[in-house]
Image 1 (cartoon, rainbow over the protein chains, first blue to last red):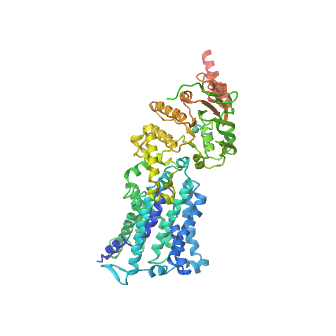
Image 2: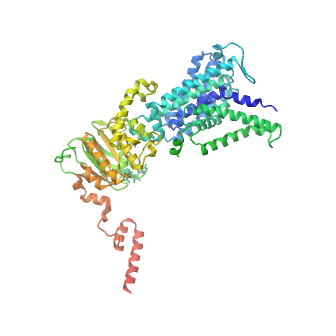
Image 3: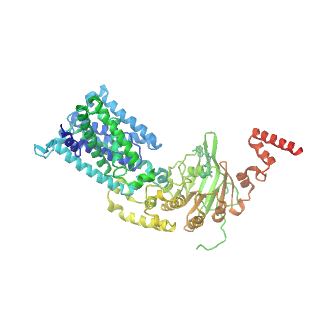
Length: 324
Length: 312
Ligand SMILES: Nc1ncnc2c1ncn2[C@@H]1O[C@H](COP(=O)(O)OP(=O)(O)OP(=O)(O)O)[C@@H](O)[C@H]1O
Ligand SMILES: [Mg+2]
């Protein structure tokens, strides 16, 4: 029997995908966990950032810094477009608009008319060129056992984690500051905060922009080692991010990171176990059913978290207690 | 302790609805607000005297809270203008109204549950550069101001007897304590005009007395207070001036000891039937005739039946 999937699952601890989801979930935590904005369009922010980076790198040949800037500016503009009409309204409007806007982005980039720029359903390959060009790591293979990385894999992992920790530090500073106090107040009751002379609308906009920026950076890290696929940024991704955030703790800084690691380990372990079960006929399922069953597991996990540990792994019990 | 002095004259001319004040802090004109077909607020003219405690009273649904919402920018009027301290405030968003020194509390208390009591208080403070995104990232730039704010907050909390709760979640406070917290938090903004919507509702009698004291203190500190209240005892005890609203209009204004006897006020509270006995069928009939002819008819039948019985 082949148990190497266990090692591969543990490779998820540091994989770029884990980093990307940790960062995007951190952005969601700023919006949802701290400010109370029900942002169901986080995948859309990732898509905007990813396309901003990939198009400017591959199609326009921009340098790395300019493409990163394009991704971030794109996400901020997207935040403005979504925020201006909805942030004055009740919370539910933002959720509806964001979920729809994310889907609009995905369908727009897939439109045949835009294929020369967006690559249509195939997405865009090769956005790693400018990033790998500045890789200082000597050519070679690094790692142990089945977990082997070439110099470019290692480069994105290192840069990705450094960025993630920097972003976590930044968000942590923000949340411990008077700025953080205001957004947390908005989460609790925005009229009370307004009555104390704070420009609630502008703080919500800032939170949405920060969340979007983190999603854009996440998308860049996600596409550099692989490629940009529009369907990776569907509604499903947003719900993965919500699962990760709730798993780790929606009002914690390290929660999204821990949540992302656990999420991808579990998903990849269950995938390995299910393949074994299918190969040896332990379960009455076929390999076609295996994919959807993984998501059933994610769904059940989400329900279990919300029921038994609403504050997440790192959250404080009392917070969930009081908000119940 | 404030010295007992003769009460100053607040108004110019005879007290009555819309009477001019010697030194008004807030002047409102033709403020109207309708919900569907129903007029919730229709205030022709009203002036709030500076440096005094004014009570806004009236039966349930009179439009007091709606009027508060309009004045503080939480709701948009259909028409109207109002001037606070010489500044036109109509159409100004709520947060700017608060910054100009006109701060309010809510009838349904808004404690920020998952913030500590102290953080609730600090939120009210002004001039904290750490509230800006870039400033927030550099603690050295806002540490000093934060320490001052914390001192100010602890002082207020001590005054409201909430200092022992400073580090608890606001969600763990009782209803009355939340009212106190909300009032203390509003004071953190150092307002000129404090608008309290039913500060006493849900506060136990033991606390009521100290709350009255706090409100009187605000006046000695030079603030103007406008409060909505149903508790007439409180109104008589601390208000310098009383404004009475009914069905959206201001129906009476005056000093607390006289305005309560104004027939317009008694009408507003009890309707025109304040001297009818609702315990008797004839009394009920009198009221029912005004409200619902069908109901009146039923009562008439009942009276007939009773007369029939008595006759036997
Ligand atoms: N958002 C709203 N939509 C529809 N009608 C409203 C709304 N807000 C208030 N009203 C109506 O306006 C009228 C005045 O309400 P308001 O809350 O101002 O009364 P109030 O004087 O504060 O009463 P109370 O003493 O019970 O608090 C009521 O008839 C109420 O039903
Ligand atoms: Mg009211």
